[in-house]
Image 1 (cartoon, protein in one colour):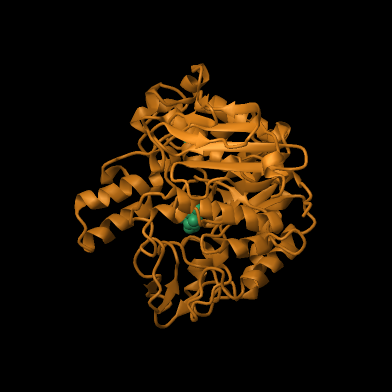
Image 2 (cartoon, protein in one colour; image 1 turned 90 degrees about the horizontal axis):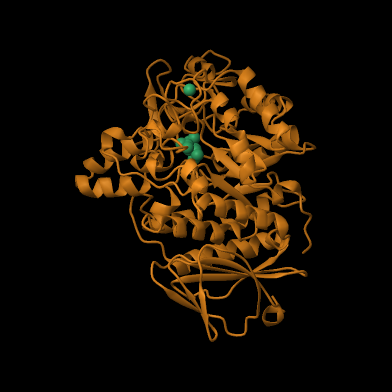
Length: 541
Ligand code: GLC
Ligand code: CA
């Protein structure tokens, strides 16, 4: 089906985690002025849209995903004036700014929650209160209910106990939220990333949490009241939603959001049903199956977002690739994901191949990591088992300060940052990348440029050539003008890809040299390449 190519379908989005991007006032914490000072760097990469993780007023129990005032900026990040300046500076560079919208819950310091503890307050129904708790657990471990002595009842929180869930059944609450959303849009921001938005339709008594019975009703109301008629970009974070539902909710004609972060491909390195800390190796055949399904479903309806990393996910190189072959594996993963159909999201530092960390437990700051350490201890796991999981999966892996240069604290700050800098900053940093002949950064720029040169990346059909191969992931993208072949090797050994009757026309991009012997391509470890090929062999897709 022919689809219109709205600007956000062709856009490259770059996520900034403000705590860790750039500190301008020497307090060890990233801030808005710091971001402004680095906008040229982001623009130079080829980015069109910046997604800014929360900078609102917050006690920072969950690093800003616990908001105590939606319309105020947290002084640690700057002022509202700074933010308006940021919007302006972003627009001057012909980019757009997308804010994070966290409306499933607030902070326990939000005045609504404080007043909600009073039975007689007009805010009494803004949160979810029950006389008795149920057995629902929190995402960060432990029960999802906490007793409040003032109200003499339990309140519901799917995340930390300092993040009470809002009661979306209550109309006055919804109206206040919509008003706040419109206020931000009227300030001139260009869209939202909606935090765990699949949870707002929940029915806790029926234990239907993600994709709950009222999800579509609420999304429609939000869309009609705030988004409709505005030329913005919206992406809903929906960890509990199927690919099929994600495609329906992003339908071009009667959907409510432009696209969704769907997580089927993200959970493949965990033992099914046992949660993110139960580790398992990534199986390439499974990964292809999940991506293939998404590519096929979204080609018919809705729109996909392409991501491997964010502030909740560990660094890709350390998670699935090889730190020893950092350049190779970082560029291979970028090629594999951004060659597909959808809107690419780059998480800060991915473009320079930043890696994860293996700190002692005292050096972690993330609430989820701290909680799970104690929970796994209580369950009887050994220290070394626990730390293996934490090193692999902790959210702090991706939250360490951005590595700008080899000066102390990686040029992120002049004082000790809020979270320890990755000790490899002297080797891995933007300045070094700019001086290297072959760098992850340079490859990202070329890849982004290529996506902007060939529309086939946006509208081409997807066809995987080797579903069952355990080492190489090769797929075709084809429209009426071009046929692309994308070859990526997940192996740390040399591998062979059989070219059969493929006719090469041109190499558009490759991360390393390769050899062709008869009809075989000899691929070095973590090889990635994008080729223009003849379309005869794949005439009918
Ligand atoms: C989302 C955010 C995550 C946060 C959680 C609760 O998943 O990305 O960082 O902890 O929601 O707000
Ligand atoms: Ca600062």
